[in-house]
Image (cartoon, rainbow over all chains, first blue to last red; front, side, top):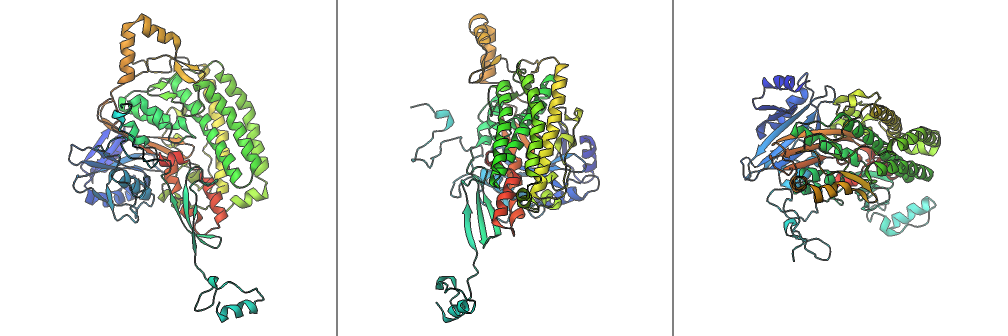
Length: 166
Length: 435
């Protein structure tokens, strides 16, 4: 289905739809996320029943600060849709979709690990890429690149903009 | 030792068992499960992967893959470099398919920029990617064979991969992490000795693939270790987000090259091999067939390149890499002639070069999700720009990361030896899993 046709099919149920660069984005409030994903999966003609990816983007100066994107793919109709949920800084919680998409398990753990977004109802929301005792969420924009104590000989790697300076 | 236990042993004609193995009250042998760590650093974990296995004797009761040992922060690093430097980072994620990482990233940035690579560059991209797919599947065959004891297949697989590595070295100067595909095209045209080398490979490889099949297809050990092992149904695979040869071996004909074509794949003539068994053997057959299909695409691309002259990089000087490069003994480097031009002849060229290197192109604000069919499945890049000279966010959706989630579903309830075969059939690359 072409991006415009897909957007037209969504307009009956959703209000906030954006078509750009041949991609369709759909913005939903977080308490409607689960219902929206179920509807998109079951709606005849859409069959968006494959979850490709979950990723978070951090905009520290904006409200909502965190945007969670769910990339959906239709295996039978060969189109894609991005569903986005905005989360405020003070309350970065979003419902887990592991019950609907078991494959979301590691995606949600990774975004929790790197951004500190909490996926409510996740069966095992623990760190996945970083060590269990890591402090902070390194892909947040207010965390620097480098500047962390390594586990090797206690050496401190300076932040990237201060490397090579005595 | 309790009297009961000793009596039981005697009644069965067995030597007396140590009391520790018996339950204190009933005297029955203890039935507890054992939890062991396979890895990190186990020969069959394809990198640094740790599998937490709960075993009941030889049977796997539960499996929990533990990852993150190769996490290098590639996504965070790209946010601190220019758009062009991003290519050199993402190529290092899944180190067995570097060209696919570069292609997925560049297609995404090009979509944000609203540009398209010239036709000759598209053909070269397809050519190197399909060569890369064959090389990657050969590593699957080699390491997977080794894990099941087929050592000769390991030697053959790496021998043929070396032929393709030589071609990559001739084209890009490097065996891996090429940074050859760049925003707006490829960094330079094929060298003189590139096409003849590829033609020689095209003559040799079909026979070699046939050779693997004669070694493995009628080999009773290979078949018994793979058939019915690591079963995954189509429903399970789709629910878990599995893509690539693993999904196609479960009966779903999903291939982004056909379903959502990119880089001109819709103009090539090739098939998507599918099997329905959903076991490790089906994945082996799918990958063997995919190598043949890739050879078909390579031959077509090579033929079309002869009639497709033209630039390999878009003209726009704001986007295109201005520095002329040439292959030196240590990879791609600055062309000496070009260096002389900017250092001695043209002040303007030097200024432009300086701007292009230190700042690069500014990409219009927006976001894209660009996905390519890597040897392991859907390799996606969610790229966000705030309009600046650096990426705001690059999320790599690596197929190994997602596919590895299906390992517990494949091996729980089967023998521990089958866990090795199942993991090999997934062909995970930990560099991509951990990024």
